[in-house]
Length: 200
Ligand code: GRF
Image (tube, rainbow, N blue to C red; front, side, top):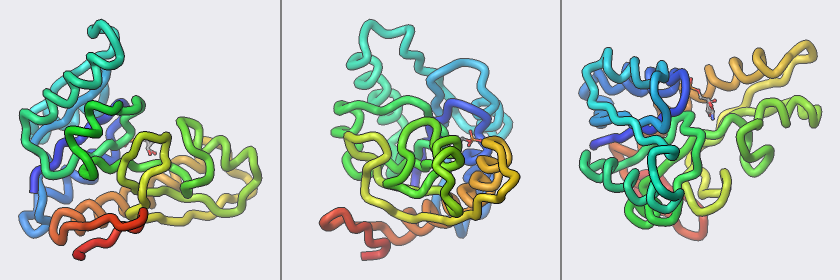
């Protein structure tokens, strides 16, 4: 199975996928990595792994809709079976989702539907929850609202700050991402009434 991964930042989730896909038994390979900005460590990780990369900046396009449609074109060139958003800090839009309907997954550092958006770990900490975690979901038109593929739980410790909590989440998140993307790739999946079934 062919994976295209989109990143915006440090790319540790991407790295976990690159490491896993080195084993042919994993059932998927990363065929390209795209970013919405230059100079990210995520792109450098892809280059070191010998994977094709592209940068697609919103500021270079005349409109959000144009950015979205041309992003879909760039991704489509690599003929992905699955598109993985791994710390991609932009919402993909209607044209993109139509093109890759039901084949885009995203990882969020909170237990959906709690704490959607870009500040999940900080919001969990501020709320005072005792557990939080990460969610892998199939992307729909909302913000972190799509059908859930997998979730993983981590404790919130009394002395956590946002960085320590997010780091604990990310350790679990990477494991979940690698495990679930591998199963999606090897076994396929269906979505019925929001329920994701792997291997159905
Ligand atoms: C992850 O926790 C992701 O869920 C969040 O940002 C982080 C990205 O980490 N949106 P990395 O770039 O994969 O290291």
